[in-house]
Length: 227
Length: 265
Image (cartoon, rainbow over the protein chains, first blue to last red):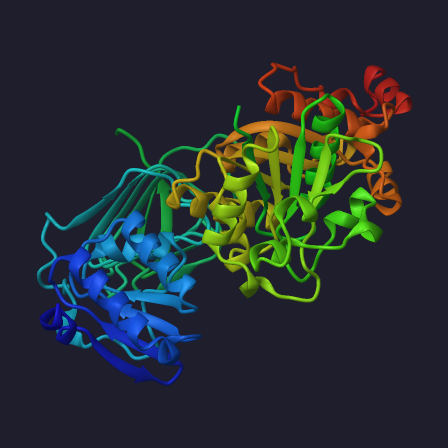
């Protein structure tokens, strides 16, 4: 246990504490961390806590459990930093921040534009509701709707098999060849690379559309046809 | 049979959560079920006023949690309905006085006391909201046919799904049939299209609701009120009955119906 304890680093930030865990088994780390909190409860009480979980893959249940346990000890968990997109999604679903004011060191980024091959896509088989923010260093495919208030930021293309009514940014790192497709393209806003379009009016009889940057450098959408 | 614990929540404030809790509680209790409602809005309590029980409060939920009284001492019995009880919120404390596990414990103790526990959630998605849903078996999201309210409801439904509290059901409150017909208000179809959850009731706009709330006599007791009828129907659906939805499109006044018949609208 003492050995695990030493793997937990605690740093003071401008507006709270940053606790860094590593890749040791989650249960062990959670217990060790809570034990440490209990021995120094006066120090931790009332703290705003950001948690860096390295590349741990955590599900909603695990994260919610820890949040509740911390809350019982008077600690407010507001952010979870992770290198795993799954864990980031989990944190976002629970309404936790996944970035703190200090940017994460560049080397911990998982994908860069260069290694953006055809394989790197994030597949989401659900409707993204208001308040959900998905950021991914590849392509994003959604089987479901993207509701107003939801945001998708992808370095590659974005395909929505459903209604797109939220905000989508494709080619977020400047890839002007990125496209956005949706069965019903009625977004609050679309962005490809540095180009932004205002909201598109919802259509009475929606048809599949594809948005891209045209030859004149303007963001444009057109109906998709089999022809 | 242990009680069913139902939390009403909305995200946005002012859509009628507290009014809905009061009316459902009254409707359930007047049909013979024992109901305990809990005001989860610590620091901004309202439910006692709407139920007309304000002047009877001795102990509140924080007193129970901090052990200053027994659970039964904080359960205020309604003046008329002997099966209706209220556990009021504390007005002089804030949301940090209660934790999720406190709520789960409280609800567990109540399960053997009654048939329904109705919890009124505060607006927002912060701690008070998390506390209110912690012990719930079922969550009902209340919204108005307004873009901002629906947007917040969508967010709340997303959080409920993530917390494993789904599937939530929906009460669409304060629908104005005339505005919908003139396409000046979102229709029930528009709202359901976006939120994609089960509808448990549509409550029409009705000024009697405000009058009832101010008098401490929820409108569900008023047999003539349309909103009261809608709340009574929701209560029956909560009990598992199949009650057809009132056709909201036919709820306009006589003159309007005549105008539509003659093709002038």
